[in-house]
Length: 579
Image (tube, rainbow, N blue to C red; front, top):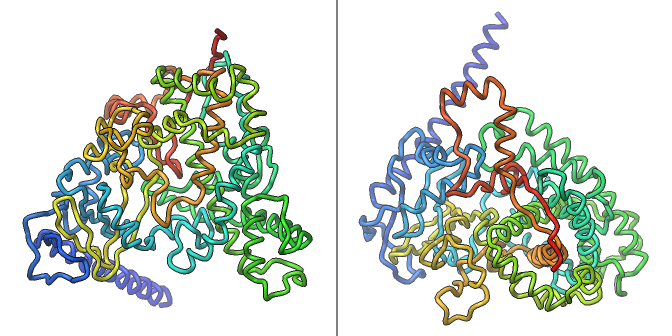
């Protein structure tokens, strides 16, 4: 009879669980249903200090896609757009295509339950400014859950309030403009290795540029964050390997990755490897900082060294010199920050570097202008540029055209956006001047891919026009401040953006005058066709060939933990013939 008792217990648990899910889903869907019926609270703009009466809400505006259902919410609506892009393309492209239906409001509500809570998708600069700057709404709980496998704990990407302010203040010195200039020689050394590896690939067939840039940027961020000489471009490294394994089974949307039963095991195991290694490095830096004292200058300009210095100053009333080991709570939180720096400082920079080369190969006029600027600033001998930059890192600031090319590249290939959570009594203004309720039951998805191609904010939005960032305010191409946010904007902008600018500029300066890179997707696809197995051939006959471009671009961003060029950007490299 024991098995009957066990079966009845399991049945009761399952019934309770199913009942809870059904009840929670019904409550959520009922809220969305009521919003649909009343037109999503579209009240004409008035003072945000007064909370509108629901009886005054108008019903003329419904910023919500058609096709909502009690069972799936808007998930099937999104799936229609996902079906229109390659299967490995980032889901942000589907959201961008959907957003075009809401050009009149520049925001709309999507019911993602149970994957995510209801979220306003926002791509209008004014509404985004309200969310991220005026109200500075907090990060969502989902942001914390999403980043936990990468960070291993609370991080600057997920913290809110005083906790975020405290940790941001500790790490600000390490990412200041001055500290970043001090670290430029390290960037140059790593880029010179990268440059030589490119020379080594001349005439050797196509290769993955994204893999090379990923190794380059990981080597740099390890040096700058931990003062660790990893030599990662030449050999594997335990931290990079562990992080790579975590990211390989990490995704914002891909259900095949999210439902992988081994995913939490892989991520937890490799997370512990990262924690042990980083804690060991923290202990070394702690002992070094103790020897140098709390008040003197330090030759170590790494992010963690400067953070420890700030921490010592804050603990001036505590005799840290008597402590054998770093405070475990501080070490735990600092480890999470370092893990995020390794991810963000590697992921975005590596992919953007690829896209800079990609855009320059497609726009030879701008490549020629960029080379001319480098000749004017660094002389006509490309080999001299490295030493000149090391001696005077501020020379990087004399390359406005190079920066404009980088900025325009980041506009067209925007990194991931951000999510914010609502607050009681909060309303955001759509393009029609209507107030949309953003209480503590809904959030906002700041969709950079749609914002950066918003034709109202960006004339000729689909075109590659670096001159946008060179003209004055009187020019129609001049950017709207709130419309450009590859690193977000306002108080929670990316702490490491200066490092990214410096890395991308140094890479362009040290390579573009001597080397040319062009994509090899045609040859890559042809090779894949030749090697296609019988199952894939049968699948193609049944379902047709898969889509391989996003709005005509073969080098679209894929969801690979971060947004990277699909297939690692296969490419060829060749030498530039001397004049």
